[in-house]
Image 1 (cartoon, rainbow, N blue to C red):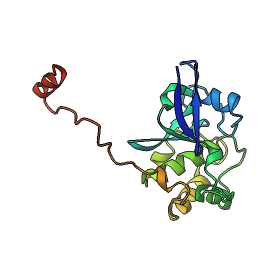
Image 2: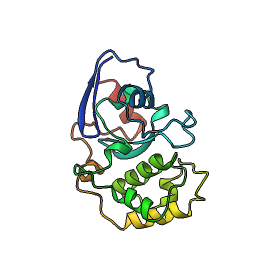
Image 3: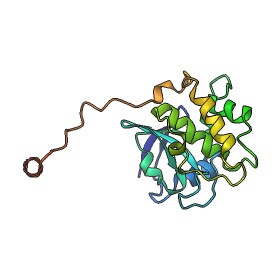
Image 4: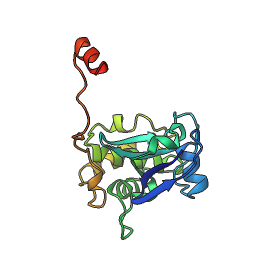
Length: 187
């Protein structure tokens, strides 16, 4: 199986991949991007959160339960890809430092990516943004203060193009009634 996608601004083309390989394993083992952590490996803790952008918009997703072929044609941004081209920190990263939103640091990359994806997607509810992330050290108060501070800042220009994408012109409109669906399927 061959796939192509954008990883942290760089086009990646992979040939003959294992369709059961996870994005997490590939990122850590093949690309050396170890900021994306392996915690539970079941999609529960959020330590492996990455940002995925496609024609529907930008979402925070668990890399541990995402198969590599699911990235075909999409844009993948890891914690390493959030910083600007000149090394400038993302506003969420700055806010996490300023508000002491990290203690042990293991969950921090996933939390930062979740908040950054939410900012790009226009999600204002921080509890919803962080619903998939567990932190055992902070009690969440400093993380929520950081989320509030980061939300007051604009999406960085280097990530502004990752926002919600318009619907693709070539996508067919889905039939709205059973009759229309039957007609659509028998064409």
